[in-house]
Length: 80
Image (tube, rainbow, N blue to C red; front, side, top):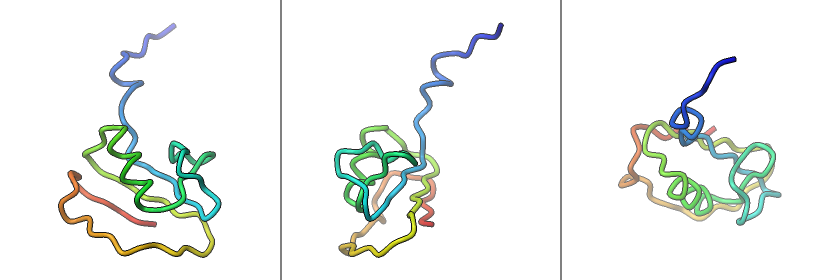
């Protein structure tokens, strides 16, 4: 029986899922996606993610406001 250190299991995830049917209060997981990019930033800030980030969009139609991400604390941000 192995033991997983708390730090490894508590590592912040840089993946945030977005869906037109997502909710602002969701945590941005695959099963509970957020709705827009402002929610993505809130989730990343709450998780303390500053490394490589992937914003994963589900299929659908989005009406997103323009946002500037150039000062965000990340090594890279990929939008898919």
